[in-house]
Length: 481
Ligand SMILES: Cc1cc2nc3c(=O)[nH]c(=O)nc-3n(C[C@H](O)[C@H](O)[C@H](O)COP(=O)(O)OP(=O)(O)OC[C@H]3O[C@@H](n4cnc5c(N)ncnc54)[C@H](O)[C@@H]3O)c2cc1C
Image (cartoon, rainbow, N blue to C red; front, top):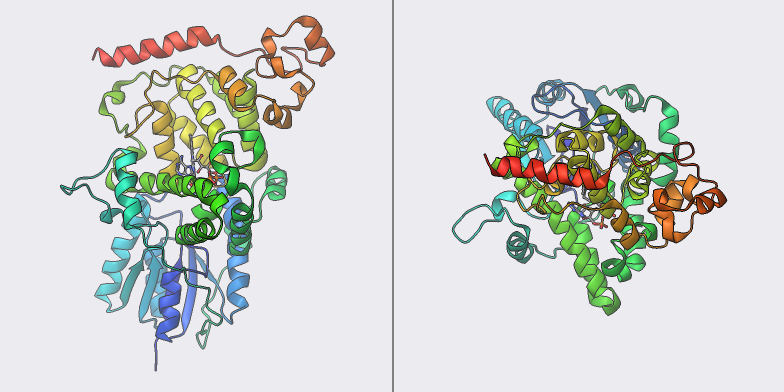
């Protein structure tokens, strides 16, 4: 009698190009697809509220896709190693297949799962698929670890094969008896209050089919202008594929292959396509850094920043930042975009992050935690590496003394004010000249635009000149140590 194979879905909520699943299908044994909602294993970081909302939808979509192929998704909760061990005993499964994870939590789980199953003669196989390359593959000529993006990507991009991703299987052999499953709704993933998720739901369609549709739309549309337009938040010129990648609803190899195919067939997409692929390189680089330097989740990559006087900021300032009420329009537009859509444009992420860690002198870990809770694309490695990059303490970071001026950033990247008008509607009637600097507008202009500073829109919460001086003084304090 053939024993079943458990296929564990964790960071790979898809059927296409899911090598763990496809290898199990090829082996011909019955398959038990499982998702374990695990908030108990050591080093596992509980998901933020926006990620939970996404997961709720994505699991529903995966379960439907599995059911259409004669299968199902078994949902369990608890410590993954214990749950999978118990499920293997219950079902007599002979193998467990999974897609490899790279976070500290995933690594601990996979190591102990392997040991526990090996003791019981149950085969445990891990497959790649969440990244383009396994982090162990990219090394300097002398076997060292890259900490600077450009040489990393020069080496890494040469190692990536343009292999055609595999299609989803048509049929998945079911076990004779299905083990018991919890209902997805019982996992407690619904946001509280539920009304918070309504605008987010209008912006996104989680799930594998939607991820593929989004890729097709991007490659047939905005990829052509991606290089020039990607820094301008009013244009929606980027792919918005990040949450789909975070939850593994589409493989990075599919993005790589499809973008290359488009670039070969249509020369108008070659520049934008190449730039897009380079951005995927930053995702690889962040994962590579976290894998090799797991301490970076809390400690600065540049050791001298361990003594940096973060945390001198005021509590009412961080509240104003979270709510998008700082009096700096581009910062407020970004923080409100985050609140309303669970996502924020990359250029604006850099501006709001710089504002928090440099102008307000809050710790980058506080900003990282807020993003972790509110982003639908919250990604352990990308989020930590990006916050450290902005804070100046990351591996290949922007120098600390380069402090973004939110007003000039707004004037440069949102010159027509379209982005601010969309998310800060109380400023919409201001002329372009003052849309990024309402506190400089003459009284009659403010009146005509219906803006009452301090009433309809806040005055700037800080004096930027003083804030900049304070930030630079904080930097000198660690230089003298
Ligand atoms: C402070 C801060 C926090 C961030 N937190 C996250 C996070 O939690 N999750 C996350 O996925 N990205 C994060 N980023 C990176 C980046 O902002 C997003 O990946 C990007 O905005 C997603 O939009 P997109 O899919 O339209 O990107 P596109 O421009 O279409 O890029 C395609 C893909 O490349 C990857 N990518 C693009 N830029 C970066 C980058 N700078 N670093 C790493 N990967 C990148 C993403 O997977 C993205 O989906 C953060 C950036 C900053 C400055």
